[in-house]
Length: 429
Image: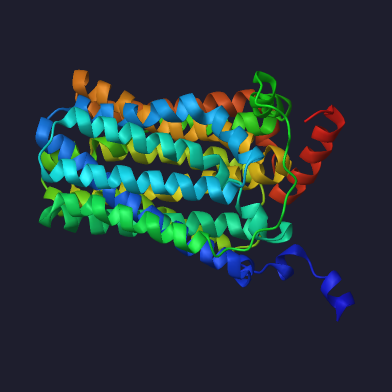
């Protein structure tokens, strides 16, 4: 029987549910799913309340700025924390900070406090989120065996999209009834993640004992400079997200262009996650991906094209379909990038590399909201969204022409072996 198992091809051995056979992973993903749902519910409430109280597209862009600044400023120190201290404790303490800021938003919303104080609380929440992101992203390799990690990446993406799909839909109904309740729900969801995470069994890993010098903080950047494939992947996604930040303008589309109100706004916010979940489940059951580099470039180009159609649409159903497609295309990029980053990075550096990735992806997402808000403020929401989609396609063309290595990526597994050999030959950490 062992001989028969060893002779199976990767397609025959493929087990789409491998990661779920680990109890710790099941606990982790349930907590992660609940916390994502809570964050999405709160995100719907923040966008809707800020636009209702100000009526300005620029105010929505400032929400993105408030969330981006801490992520940029704290990314490298957060990566060092993740590689030096107990990652679970870092995540749990940060979640407690999220709970406190969400309770503050609920109180401020109930009292109709000034909007600038909402921005202040969003900065606080973004600060604790920035500190926890690298630690959380580096936890999964401590929960599942290495051979199950690709399965875990796909299901992490799938369940994140479930939360991003259900959360906005719930949020649309909640803000119709009572906006402060949305913030309270996020606090409850974060507390649930804290409780479940405390029950997860983790594999022990060696911790670095280096002092927090400039050299140790910049180790992740040096690693990415040597691993050019990862740098190309991150840059492609960063510019695509930066230019394609239509999500922040959805309150304008829901109220002023599509005229669908808060419930329609909730469905619009949920549509990308529905598409991403559909694609993530499909990818989990398909054999290991071939020609991943080509697929990545096509997916990001498709994301830009769907964004353009959404920006021009005045039909709710067409807009919903295009947002669904942005989620489908975005999930392909997320799975490829997430798998490569974690498997190509030594465990002792996963926190710092994840921190740099957080700046590329997370901060660009929030700054994309600022860019969209500014463009909409000066030129209108339609121009902002359509020009962003055109810019995304332009970035794909530039990347395809300039990165032969990315175009040549085939199987993720084969790329991992080849890239690790290259990094080892380069020396250093």
